[in-house]
Length: 148
Image: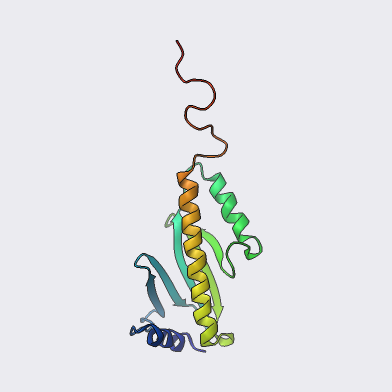
C-alpha cells in the first residue's frame, strides 16, 4: 500500500481530511498533546516518530540504562526503537514501516501500537525524573545534616 493512500484512508476513518504534505509528511496529534509524525523516506519506506522526553544534560545514567533496556529486542518498545537527537536535545521513539508489505489494517495497528508505547515511555521518563536518584541518598537520609 502507498503511504499517501494509507494516510487518506486513516483520515476517512477518523473523519479528518488527512494527506501528506509536499515533503511527504503528515503530523497527527493524539489526545491534544502527543504529536506523531508520519514521514515517507524513500521508496516504500516510511517512519513514525515522536519525542518522548528531553535529553538530560547530566545525571541521566539511570534514564539511559532504562532506555537501553527497553530497546533490547524491542522488549519495551514493540516494533519501535528509542534513540536520541543530540542536536535537538530530545529522546525519540521511531518505527520503520515498509509500506510495500503493509496493508491498511497493519498500518492502523502500527500507529496504535506506536502511540501506546510512546505514552508509556513518556510516563516512565516523567516518573524517573520525579523520583530521587537511586544511588543518591534522599534528602535527610542517614546522618543529620545539622551538627551542633
